[in-house]
Length: 278
Image 1 (cartoon, rainbow, N blue to C red):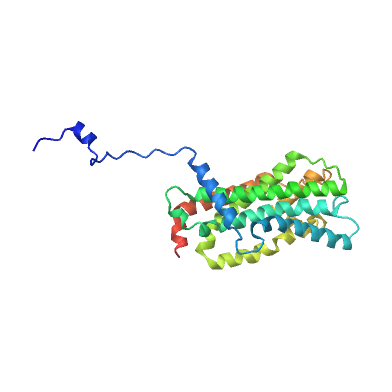
Image 2: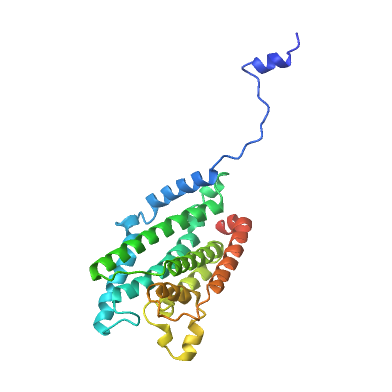
């Protein structure tokens, strides 16, 4: 039988090409994150009749109820003269932190099947939920501010640097705690229940409803170390420049966020499939 030359083998339709090293796809993360965002948008809260729209309605309804109730109890808010503005500057940063940490903490369970695909990583899942939640809350923030400013003719001129810093602190803390809890929640149902118990009344001690500086000094001395309270105070300072926030420390909040994010990321890469299978 005549020998088959290399040229002949290369031209034969039955020949097998030698394996080639896979090249990393350009913009892989952008495409994967975009696909995950579309999936999140279509499926989040799909069991509820309002679906994704509830993420927009929830903070708006909260602000409206708080404004009406407290206007009946008090003649003026703790800061400024407008109840709606006072609660917008408290509810929105708190809601951004809370929603972001909650959505990221549940992201690994929601995307359990996708994590088995070679093109999807835990970072992709976290990025998708972070971007969707942040964009939603920022749009709500801008829309509500516009409505309040127009309806009450406030002619707002907030300190944009302080606004961005407050939003950045809220996003960082939500991302950090959410990433850490994305490991701890599947690992321990007891911890998840305990976290829900603790974080429930958090809004009461974060300055959203009341001015924590008006509380007795021993209580304020403890509450001022609450990072969420510092986020709320930072945002309010952007709209009420006379509000003294010497006790607020952005590096302190960002340090907590960074430590939680780093620990959570290590745990996700090393143990996530173990805890999801428990």
